[in-house]
Figure: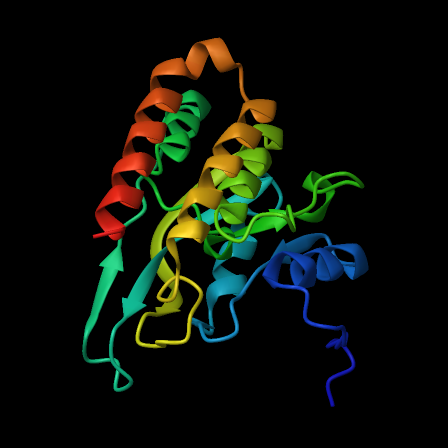
Length: 205
């Protein structure tokens, strides 16, 4: 009913394929991603708009919701990073959250070549977030939990992740090298590989 809303129908090709379709059809200045079972604070866009003139990207905190009545929840507080190198290091090691739904991005960052990798079933957000950070000249961090992350939905991709999917994350780690000065971040790449290997081994028992 609202003419500003456009709906696109396509055969199910996974979340990356759907997001890419949205990027390719986007007409506005800004892009934001929201997963189907999550929701937002009503004032998210109006609050973030205060920073639109000077930022390429705005990232914010989120609330994990563990029960349908919203009584069980916890807030992830996003810190204000002092340098891009600090942020990139933490992204590589996944010591900060890497979901793309945690921000608003200038559409021009995607240009004509930056798209989600449809070959990745896990790790596509990780790779995309790093690429966006690499292209940004100004990032605004807000410790305000605008995003409501549904953690009680047992049908989510994360809750049904298999060992094969977890191994798929190594492909994302290899692809990350395209967006960084590899020599500068070697220790962080090594640590991330070790943590991923441990995660896969722990999940297999």
